[in-house]
Image (cartoon, rainbow, N blue to C red; front, side, top):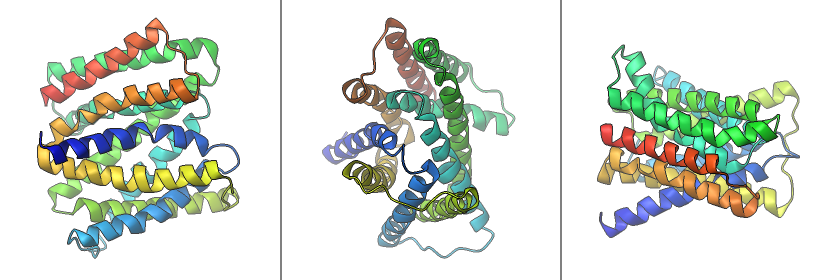
Amino acid sequence: MAPFDMLLYAGVVFGWSTSWLPLKWQLGVVAPEISLFWRFLMAAPMMALLAVMSGQSLRFDWRVHWRFAALGLFIFSGNFTLFYHAANGVASGLLAVVFSTASLVNVLMGAALGRQRPPIRHLLAAFVGISGVALLYWPELQLSETALPSLLLCLVGTLFFCSGNMVSAASQRRGIPVFASTAWGMTYGACYLGLVSFVMGYEFMIERTPLYVGSLMWLTIISSVLTFSCYLMLIGKIGASRAGYATVVFPVFALLISTGFENYHWTLLGIAGLGLVVAGNIIMIRAR
């Protein structure tokens, strides 16, 4: 791997690993939907600027906008909202572990939608990875009543994310540029979040504390724009399979961050569970 590719890879792992704790810092005073509204309201024009700088047009036929609207619904509003609400019940690192199973779910969903029987190695990878999530969450389920609802929200959020991936993949096959589609997806996501917040009567506010403002800027600039840009460039340079190894690494670092900042307590089941999640992702990536 070339030095610049290694730098991109490190940027992806760093950005994904460090996004979960700031997500947790967003909770409390401001409704999650409002925090996400501000996040994507700021991220969308930044991504649009990257699209223009990359030579991508932002003008599309109205029929294409149905795809962007679906992308905004699945990824940039539904998925994130569910994970924000799930963060109330468990350590942020556990959210990262569940999210990392998206690489497993993506392949299985693709096989189901294509009415094809998935290869045995894909089924094995999914079984190993999901078993790992169950082991990781088992100690939490024994100690906290909020752990199970949080896990269910994470799983549904991952399904939303994977559905958005299906939409994005179909758009790319039609030649729709990724940066441009992402910019529009973020725009639609911000619109959904703003509409839901208005209907629910949430106050459009910003908590004026260094922790909230700092985490909002981090999630907007680092997690939503720069990390995603690094990942897209990495896919273009080394391929999706090799770039996918970031999903193996970042949950480990996210849990280590939880250990330092949230007093996450490791157990033998937790260590075994994390090992199975990592193993499931490796099996899936090598089987592609």
